[in-house]
Length: 344
Image: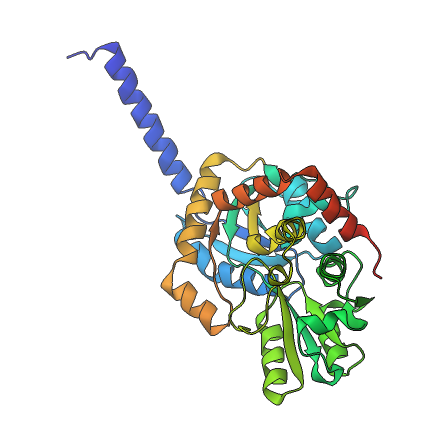
C-alpha cells in the first residue's frame, strides 16, 4: 500500500533526525578533548581543570579521553583568545578561563589584546565560587578591619591591575582604609612568603585555593596570622569572624561598586567553548558538565582535595554577565577609575 506523501515525508524526517541524533551521540567516540587552562600547572584553576578532566569523559557519549593543556599568559587573555579564535571549533577544545575574563570588557584591561567577546563564548558553567581574603601577620598588631583606617598597611601584590591592588584601592576610596599594595611579587606563593617573613603587613588574595587555605590554617593555629577581611558576595565560613567588604560599607553607591566587582567572584572558575562550536556538541558538553558536577565520585574526590564545588550553569553565568554589563554607567565608570588608579 502506498502511503500518502505527507506521511512518507514525516517518516523520512524522523529517520534523518534519528540518524543525526545518533551521529551526534557518537561524535566524541575515539576523540580527545583538551581543557585549556589559563593558569600554570599547580595553580587553583589548574586543580579544578584536572579534577574535571578525570571525570568528564565518563558523562560524554563515546567516553572520549580528556586532558589538560596549560596556557598561562596576560592574566588569562592568552587562553581566552586561543579558544575564541584559534582552537578547533568542534567541541574538542574547552577553555578553563580565569574569572577576571568575564568582566574584562567592562574593565577594559588589556583592551587591545582582547580578541574575544565574553557574550559570544558558549559557557558550559563553573565549578566554584570565589571569595578573596586578607590575611595579616600578627606582628603587625592589626586586630580588626577598623584598624586598617588607623595607619598605613602594606600588602604584597602582583600588579596594579590584579585583585590584590584593585580591591585595596577600592577599600581605600570607599571605606577610608590606608592600604598600600607593594607590587611585583610573583603570585600568591611569593606574596604569602612576604607575609611570613614580615616584609609586609599582609596579603590580599583575590581568591582561595587549597594550598593557600592550608598555609593560612597552619599560621592561625600557630597564632602567627589572622584573617581580617573577606572580599566576595558571600562569607567563606572557614573564616566566620572575618567580615566581608560589603559588611563595612553602608553607602548604597559604594556597595554597588563592590557588588559589581564581585560578579567575577560569583562566576568563579568558568568553562567555555568557542563561539562557532556546533549546537549539538555544545548541548552534549553542557549536559556532561552538569552531570559531572553532581557525580558522587567527582564530589568525593573534590572533597578529598579540599576543592569545594559550587555549580553554576550556563544560564546563570549569562544572567550575571548581563546584569553586570547593564549596570548604571556611572557605577561602571567608578569601578573603572578605581581599577586603573595608582595605589596611594
